[in-house]
Length: 306
Length: 307
Image 1 (cartoon, rainbow over the protein chains, first blue to last red):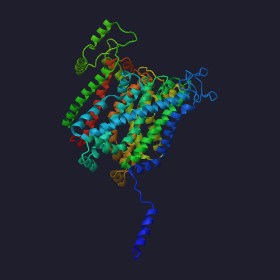
Image 2: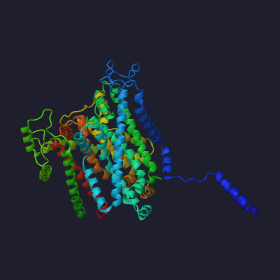
Image 3: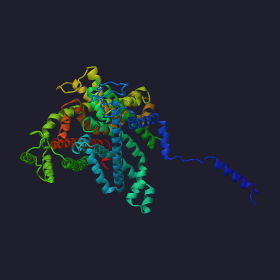
Image 4: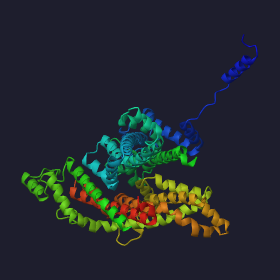
């Protein structure tokens, strides 16, 4: 007969109470990091601004009355004019600066995204393979990275662009193909310590192939440094792209990028200041925000400073 | 120490050789050549030109000829300007590039270290915030934009300084280029210095020094600054090579007669000779600087030697 001693009653009450109360939740490392990041005001504001810039760059053109290559013959080299819809003025060819700045921002963002994906992918796979296999493979692969490091970066990009033509796709790939070196070194260092952990040994004991171990067990554990480094790579790539465009080696007319716009605006900035100030403001804001986000992520994910 | 130095120098040689090989083949395998002008050259002229520069030989032979000459210290001829050699370009342009980079290097290092110390000592007070902001600007604004804004301010509006160009021996023409070149370098150094200084100021031996009654100045001068300089020292080598390549861009922007101007023109004209020669020269400089840093580090820190 249940309930004779009242013990069951007490236990049932206790079980009900537990069910009503929230079970104590564990916090994952990611949640921890996100919480720390959300306390960093500069980083949060920067994320907001970057999202805003991305949205405006991609949606904005649909609301701008002029196309980026459309010529308005009635207003050439004119300062901002709200009646005609030239909110940032026009350039020497009568093209609307706002439309061009939006298109240029789009182009710079696309270049940065593609080049970052390329460099992160190459860097992570290369570094993980090198670190995991170790020994002779490792020293050979890292020697190659040393060689690439010795090549002067700017010269190399200029050579690539000049030799292989001014194709934007090649521009993305070329810049990405050079930026992966540091990523590979960081990933290799991390892999060297991760591969000694028990779960890798367990995977190996259960018969997983090296490639599966690298992809399924090592790479996911690298996400922290990879995210930080990728965020810091984006501004570097935007600068590289805009510098190439500044030299006239990047994106070609009528398409444009922030660097192209700045190089067109700089020589005439004395008489037509709106041609320099618009693109320059967007570029500086973007780079500043991305750098703050990168620093914020590093502080949030770096276990040393906890 | 000597054995370590010997080992390091030996291991740099294959790296240099492989890098030369990579450069050579990338340039040669790319489509287009130095003689693709607007107007096609007569076939016999083209054949003679190609024979003159050994371009008619198999690629692998060209490679051995090139490396053979390189070992004798000959960086090769220009393929567009007749009778002009990479050695001439280096004689004309390199002293200028080096001067620009060294000015920027000395000024930026000095300013960076002092700014880092000031920021660290005043951590989270207004001098720190002001310096961090200036540093951030230096890191974030690309050099060509910085150059454009400085030219606009100091050359066009204030008319204090020339906007570009070069008059031999004129300091005024160097101020803006050196500023543009030095700013990011100073910013990186002061960041490093601030970080390591804050760490050192929190260490036990600094507390001991304060506890035995040393004034703050003496603590800094005798105990804190030297150990805090270590990360800065290790950045100086890469920093100088960064300034040397960065100088190419600044020369291009300000129209200064260093190597940079010739390099970009040569790349556009597909002048293999100049492009390859310049790239290899820079590569050797970077390798030499890295080697130097490694050796200095081994000298400072005996643990490195026996790894």
